[in-house]
Image (cartoon, rainbow, N blue to C red; front, side):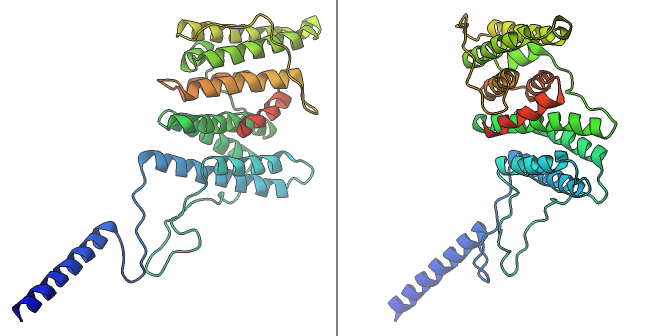
Length: 301
């Protein structure tokens, strides 16, 4: 009899310990659902960027409905949705609906009513600033995504602001700071290819249209010097053949994509990343709306 009591006592103790373990793990016995772990600081930044991207997509979609003769807002809506996807999407613990006794945390993915083009430009600019900042603390393998979103949204903000009669800028571009923030051998070689292709493209322009091109080339040279002084191994080729161009692509577009991608990748592996220096300088390389439009290719990198 005593042994049976001892056996049942041990069994009760084991059950109690198991229940206690489940409680600490966040398991509710009424639903079997487990409470989600508290998000890290970086995850909160990522979620905020994904939500803001979704709001931008929604705002642009509404503006596109009211601007049937223009595809500008429709393209931004599609691109901003791609931002959100690239960043990992808007996270919900239970995407198909919370179980009984649980609720999904609120998310903000709808644009404020009445958002106009000027408001959309501000939202894009805010997203760019926040993504550039978040890149500094992101894991190395995710930095390029943050930086690509930051660069593209800043370029879109400039064009939308101009459409609304306002002005947005790249920030304070500094080729030396950008070079230091992305100083790798691959980035240096990519920048060299871009520089040579831009020189080839500029050579076909009339003399009075070359001043902006010369200034752009000089800034790339300054960036390269900063890369070398920061430790990037210099094995640049004297002549790099131009790439095969896709339909509608120009050598200038290819060069800008190469330069920007090299900067973003270099900054992604830097020991001390500087997202703002990288993004503001890369942004400054795009001189016209047509050039800025071609930057969407970076999101596919």
